[in-house]
Amino acid sequence: MDESGTICTFVGANAGKGRASFRATLYESEAMERVLLLKGGAGNGKSTLMRRLAAAAEAAGARVERVFCPSDPRSLDAVVCRERGWAVTDATPPHADEARYHCAPEEYLSLSPFVDGG
Image (cartoon, rainbow, N blue to C red; front, side, top):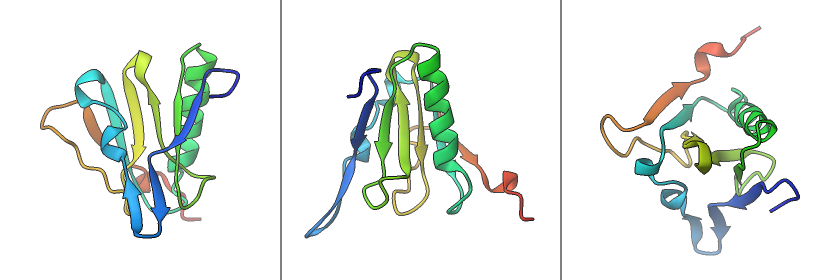
């Protein structure tokens, strides 16, 4: 935890016996009002969006958990704001997330339509 109370962590690791993941423990769907599962290719802006959401929440006084990618620690895998009831996760492979329950707060957001190809 840093001075602002922000928690920075990993929910997975690259280990000798392969990749270990604890993504299922990232948040409890029942405790969240909204969860965005981001889809999109490399460079689509998933980490940038999560960084900006985290900064905005912190600026509003909320405590945020930043979850970094074990294979690229400069990249975010998720941002969770428990006290405000939301989470945003990178749901593209290799850590593909799927909605856990029908009609739950989890919804997909594809960033691909917003990429400027020029």
